Length: 535
Image (cartoon, rainbow, N blue to C red; front, top):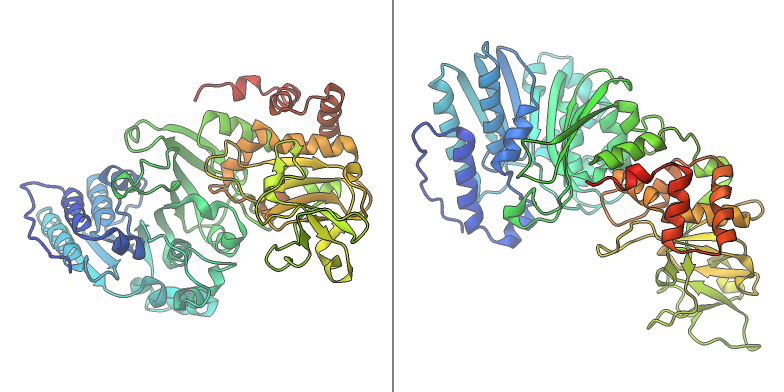
């Protein structure tokens, strides 16, 4: 049981500063498990003020929603900013949601002081604290018929918001969770609760309403967030993005390692040519002096692709590489190159997997695991416990095998200690005398359906994937260690002849080191000044 200590506001204290002190007091009493179970990562004051500064909404009467409020520091910072910049403001209505009963007394203290502060400035204030689940209360807005009834009836004032600001909870939901079921239109795999908050909030905005969220950046790509991205980016227009280059500093008080992003969007007609301001800082210490750039919406979001991936450049180097990549029009499919995931799931295929080669007694094919794949080098056989390097060729295992021809093997996962996210090795059909080979499920493989990949294509494409250029490109939209086939299918590539040029140079040099790969790639695309630029 958390004890609510009476914390008196200081004289002339800003509401956001008071809310922050309340949050610190609560956080000191709450256990790490309690905060983790509730997805609680409280917003530091500098970040709250930055998010509030993104607001440009001006009306005499404003309705605000904070769907995961904690001690309401974001609402307080936002309202302070509105009062400062909006001389015509007369009335503010605030609705907040909070499900953690332990923090509710602290939230109420914060809202009480906010009301006193506003009344002292002659501004009417009404607040409603909902002590129940935001998703379950509002998921019906995702139904088109429900949206029509909400926005085109007399209930419009009570069901649409001018500004929605939030630092929502972050944790994964199971497929049978009632919130997952209620918000099914946002789900295309195992959802993280924060994306359900964002999707529902976008639908709750009034015309020209503003949405300001801080979340993990994992929604930017990946199949699990595909349904969310499709709904979100076809509902609101992206306007501002702020990125944090450090995984440690954003929520350092809570010892959180998370790649986070602040996103501001407006409920208006989608215009792919509209400018988006992109700023970035290492963390909180330099938050007042960020680097700033601007892009057209269609430079950051592939609105017409199946995946609608959001690119998030955090430095001049990444911005320059994104500009180069945007000049390329081709994807792997344009070269009749496909990507699939290895069909051998080890625990299901254990009866077929062997560690020892038996010449003449059974037919065996090589089996390639993630640990066999290194940059530009396939290390096989390589003995690891319970990772046999062979798989039986027989009728019952045939569905697990693929034809023996030229491939590129790519790890589906990298570790946090790996310097690169993309780790690929070439495989050539003369590597092993067999009609078939086995590829384990933690490895993706690239191939040409009809015929072979040429040797120069295999080496050139593999080199490009292993290059610093492509590793940087991949990190612009991927905030985790997973390398999905879906994302690779959407990546842009240079003309096929340039891939062959890279491959032929490496083959002629007989130097497959990453250093040589980067030298050849950098020279071809004139990248020396970009990649050697000090951050």
